[in-house]
Length: 488
Ligand code: C2O
Ligand code: CU
Ligand code: CU
Image (spheres, rainbow, N blue to C red):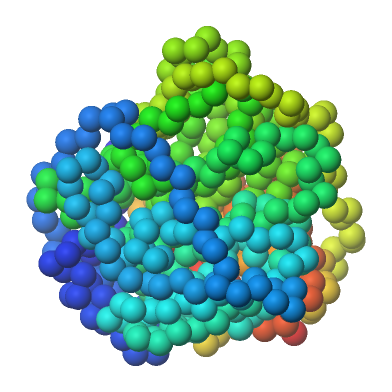
């Protein structure tokens, strides 16, 4: 539909043979950053013809990401170690796909944290080049937030401290290294971080083995198994928890499903063949009240927690979770099970809205003629403070997607979304109208449709220092659609 995308989709090829080449340039502190142009694109590789590997849907079970065990627990803190390394993953049965992954697992190990109890993770970078880690959705001190230039250099380690002083929520961790986050996350640097608030057990929501995180993303995989990163529209393999179109056997009862769109570019629109999905949570935790849906749009990095009641379907039913381009996975109802769980009418009220003292405008746009992406007309510069926020201030951010009639072509539009580090925000309105269903709680990432203006309100509590905001189509942020805000 948009041929210009091919020009804009300057990816690299991620495969065993080319990993070294793709990552060679990310060694030093600022190799991928250029004083004159703001960004350089060492990861670009010549376009090549690709023969896609065929995928037969529903032939493998969907695994659950393993849960990480602390190496030690003392002084109110759980300590973990995670290696960042290359590995092979069997995403499509019978094919080995080279990946870069946390502990070598294509969905990284899940870190389970509790509200009010600290977590300290030592990330050990065993790659031949720099990487780093950001806890997406975390209320995190600046030094542990994975600012673009805070590299974990090749062969070194870095300790990240997470205070967990925020609401229970489905968070995730991923790479955020300057100019390379798109390559690294696409290559597999993504994992769940589930922050549990024990007080939420009062709601009686499905728990334990009936509380299932599902990381959904796309990829293009060629017939040798290599992941190809060039044309975003060619990423037609839909992957759930690291497997292409798996099946998942469920009992005829209610499940809490924690969905994450970990794609670096694709907007998903999920449906369950018309079956009801009761949304109970979003990025920042539980909603004020459940929302019944049959369609669930998710832009990159957004989370949606849904409850699905499989007892409404007879044993033997197979329910396909689909995106508009095809099936993501299939739920097979295979057995009976007792179910004491419920979905109460009221969940967690959002925090009050203190009066905002500052309003700011952010315009997202791309350049049709070169691979520069902008916020307020500027590409990202990690050394430039775009916004200074007073600690404790409440602000309204008006975010507009300017990409209508892109490149002067009437009707050509581009999607974007918007993510803010450090704090969860409220969505006040969209073009003056109400927020979308599912946006009534706390959010850290929202879609911003072509021409649309979304107003967000946030209170910047606790931690001073440098942070980021950006489009979370990471192929946009990695080419400059990102800004720096400092809390002072
Ligand atoms: Cu999910 Cu700035 O990141
Ligand atoms: Cu983030
Ligand atoms: Cu964008």
